[in-house]
Length: 107
Picture 1 (cartoon, one colour):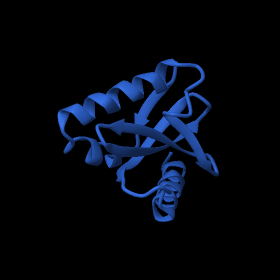
Picture 2 (cartoon, rainbow, N blue to C red):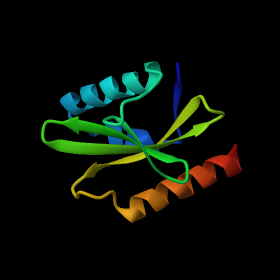
Picture 3 (cartoon, rainbow, N blue to C red):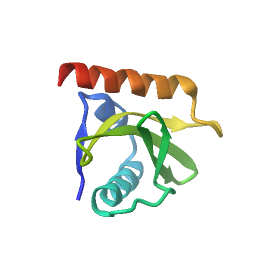
Picture 4 (cartoon, rainbow, N blue to C red):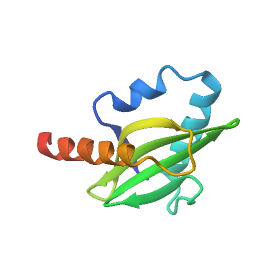
């Protein structure tokens, strides 16, 4: 079982304004991330340099939440966004790397 820990308010800033049906889907996928030993690639994908994305599809919208591991058990949830293009934007990945760096500097 994994522990999810949001870093600062980045995750909540994205999550809180969403409609309830989208929040329900995010909660469902996060429960899979917490409890399944091998998370299906449909929901969880390594991007680069230890940054992963949690993938959520709700209705016809696609959402991504960036994350990384700390001590092999802790999943730190960073920011998220609604995906509108086929490829994950480079600036979003770089933003996640900066947040991870900030996390370790303040740990």
